[in-house]
Each structure stands twice: as structure tokens, then as C-alpha cells.
Image (cartoon, rainbow, N blue to C red; front, side, top):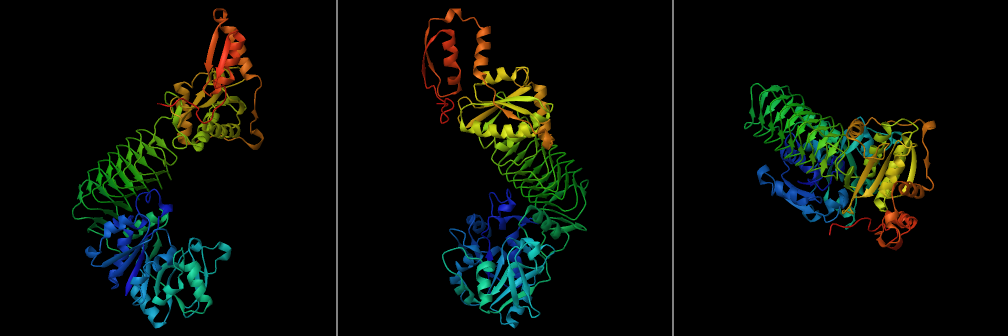
Length: 593
């Protein structure tokens, strides 16, 4: 009998672990999930296997090759576009016509008795036998009901609780006769459970369900991934664990180096050529991949660490996943359910909060407190503020979400009911992000005086007036049209002083934002005569006698200066020729060239 291993899924719910590798290659107990599946097939005498591939297919082919190292024969059927569970098998139909075959997922961890399932299929002369498993929560799976003889009566894909009529779910393990392939329409996506099986059932075909007693876990989420690791270490699933049992539940590879003064509390697994120094503490359900270095004073509990990771002195990891070739430096702390992608650097004393996802190739700066996922940004920074305020690439480093958090933190540092001035330049990015700022301020019980499009000096002037406690201005970074600056001002219209910046950063890092009660939601108003007031006050403080009777050409470059400068110079008595006196949202700043 041949087997078909379906290994084409992207595993989007498991990102960032699957951001740059296919889900079947994710390690469980230091072996790819698909390798556990192939070893299971071999234990039951199935050595000829066709692997269906789509997402990052070359990585799977390169890892397993022809299967010789596992004592198997592997062939590959690659899809150009996703074809669904049935379509992918149909894509390999030319290699499956000779005899019945077994279909199994390459990204589910199981030790189901395949030999007994094959016996059940033969004894019932079934066209299709579906592997079933009883689970406590069937909502994420397709559920199936069978009669006393095991014949399938009904299918339902991913029901609600009100629709649940059985706790037996579809494991994605099938035994099929080759004529089933004729029921799959070629060329497009087709699914077994929602397309092929219901049609066969309506025609009275012999479809049976085999309720398995063994272990089965669909490794589709971060939670189920950690659970699968713990279940292997606890012996709940029969898979091969490399190495020897140093003490009950403590599995160590032969080539690993573990100092006698290291603290090991199993069950746990230490991979090949790993090094654990004295004073390090590894506690229950920890998995160290190959070539991992754990320095003195590091603490790990329920942590899954992939290959080639460095863990510095005093690093603290709890209930997290660390991708391969990542460096966790001294004193860094990674909390529950956080996931660090491949080839990241977590610098000394950085703190990654619970549930944060850091995508591959990122750097978290020393001392940074990261409460939100780092997806597009290149770095997780310790300080929000730079020389131009809070700056970064639009929708990469400066997003609407960041603007909401920043404005919410600013509102938290002010008294309820105070006024804040907001303004922007003429760019579409600044316009969109300012809306997020205004929404967060008013939700935080801070009234907003919106100047709309206005030059930064005008915003500073109005922020310094007695009625305002400060201001926020958004502008395109000078010389870089892809970036934006968020300038936060105090009650004098000056940049927020360092002490106030640190206070605001603490609120952002702790996410301790104040929210207004429904009756406290603040107002948004648009002050009148903002430019006239600024012009009058400027002329009152500037001696203009020496600049009268001049002729000046003013190029406003499509910026907000066109709202102020021509009128201001006209009031002085200067003869002005103005060019580009319009708001140009396409070219909001000069380019670097």
C-alpha cells in the first residue's frame, strides 16, 4: 500500500514560526512534524509515499530527499496553486491507481494504529474509511456521525455549539480505493469533507468511520504546538525521542554537554550538541534544539527553543517559542505565549510581553519593553522618541495602531477635560494618522482643537496659548516622503521635555491607558482665525520697518506654508509673487535627491 502525505499548507495561524518555513517542517521534540508522520507510516509497513507540496515546496524536498535516510521511498507532487485536500491528491493520481492508498496530514502529530484502520477498511469492503477521534471541543474540526457498524451517516464542517451532534471529528486520515479519484474534478480546489464525501454519501457509497483510540493533535495554533511538545515529553504519544533518559523524564542527546551543576526538572529534552552551563535551570516541558547554548543563570520553563539558539546569562524564558538561529542576550525576558521568529536578536535586558509575536530577522533593542507584535518594523526600540519626535516609515514603523497607543498615553498624562491642539501637513499619510490621534485623545477625555492642515510654527503657537495643555503635530519627515514625524508638544508649544517623554513611554510600555466614561467623551472643535491670530501675534513682536517695499518670490512648494506666508508678507507691505501656492499631497516634502 502507498501513502499520500499532504504537506502543502502554509500554517498561517502558526506565524511567525511558519513565516519562512512550511508547517510540516516545524520541529516537535526536535524532529519535524512530518518526520514523525513518516516514521509512523514505516512502523506500519507503509514505505512508499507520495508527498503533496505547495507552500515552500523546495524546503520540504531538500530536507527529506528521496527518503533513503528513513528507509522509505518518497516521491513529490507539487501544486502551482492550492488545490484543496482532494485536489492535491488528484494531482498525484497517476501514482495511486494500482491499489488502495492511505492519505494522512503531514502536520498533525499522531500515533493512531494505522494497521488496525487498514484491517477495518478491508473487513467492511469500504470505498473510503475516515479516521475519527473523540475530542472535548469539536468546534474547530469537521464532525462526523456513524452508526453502530461504523458507516458514516452525516458530515458537518466546523459547527457552532448549537450544531454539534457528535464528538467524533475528522482527523484527515483516510484509506481509499483508487476509483475515488474519479470523483475529484481536476484543475481546481476540491475538498474531501465538503465536496467529495457528501456527494458519495448521497449516492449511498460505502463510507465508513474508524474511531481511533490513539493520540491525535492537529498542530494548528501556538497553543496546540506547545501542547504537542508537552504531550511527547509526558509520554502521551508514541514517537521516537532522540537521546537517552538521564533521569526520569530528562532526555539528553548523546552529544549534548550538560554541566552537573545545572538544574534539570523533567520532563524535558536537550538536543544534539547543546550546551547547558552550571547554574542554568531547565524546568518542566522545556525543549532545547540542536546546538543551543544556555549560559549560567538562565531560566527556562515550558520553553521550546529551536536549533542554533544562544541564551545569555540570566535570560528568562517561560511558555514561549524561540525560532532557530536567534540570540537571546543576557537578562532578556520572554513571557508566556510569546513567539520569536528565526534569526532575531533580543538584546540585553529586553522584555517581550505575553502573546507578542516577533517576526524573523528582527532586533529588539537593549532594555526595550515590547507589548505589541513586531511584524513590519526592523527593530523593537527602547525609546519611542528621537530627535524629530516619534519618527518612522509610514504603515511600517508608524502605524495607525501606534498613533492610537501614543495618543492614548499622552491623554493619560493629562487631566481629564484639558485641551490639546492637533495639526498636520498636507500629506495623505499625516491626514490618516491624525484621525487616529484625534479618536484616541477624545476617547481619553481630552478635548481636541484641530487646526487641520497648518505649519508646525502655527501649531506650536496655538499649543502655547492658555487654553491648551499641549499639542500633537504630524508631518512628513523632511527629505523622506516615505516617513512621518509625530511631534508632541507641552503647554509652551515646545517639544515634550525628556522627563515627560519618559513618563509617556512608561504608559505605552505598561499599556495603562486611561479611558473616559461615556459621559466624559471629549469634544472635537475647529478653532477660527488660527492663521490670522498667529500672523497678528508674530507681527506684534517683529520689527518689519526694514523689509517694506521689497519684491519677493515665494515658492511654497505645495506645502502648508502657502496658508500663511503670502498673507503674512502682504501684511508687512512686501510685494509677493507666489508660486506653487497649493496643498500638494503627492509631494509633501523635498526628496533626498
